[in-house]
Amino acid sequence: MSEISSELSKLSPRDLQLYASKLLEAYCKAKSFQHTAINDLVAHLNNYPEDRNLSEWEKMGALLPLNGRGDDMPSDLSESIPSQDFEDFCQIVDSAVEVGIVDLYGAPTDLPVKFIEKISLILSRNKINLPQF
Image (cartoon, rainbow, N blue to C red; front, side, top):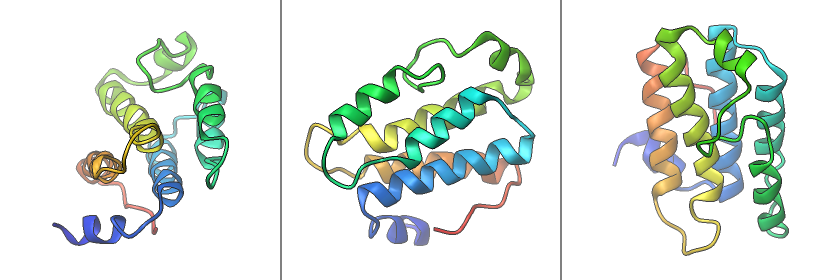
């Protein structure tokens, strides 16, 4: 287990979701990607509830224009992302969303940490510094 995985495995589900959101924000800031749909998704991810109303939170996330669940993103957003960055952006969005929902209806797994590691690798490959936990 890597040092980052060891540190991540100590975090609560909420803290993992907040960190995934920070990673998404760091990527968008470094790439100068700005759009209300990104802001709305980050706000939603940052609003991950402590214990209760998780299913309501999850349902609200599915209704967002950028929801990371395989739905088309707003066309003006997709058109604003350079083609060389589009796949990375989509993987980061999808992974950041999965961090909070992958274990929502079952037993805890190591999948949230694996999704964060995936995002971290993309940021590292793009020479973007990882935010602090």
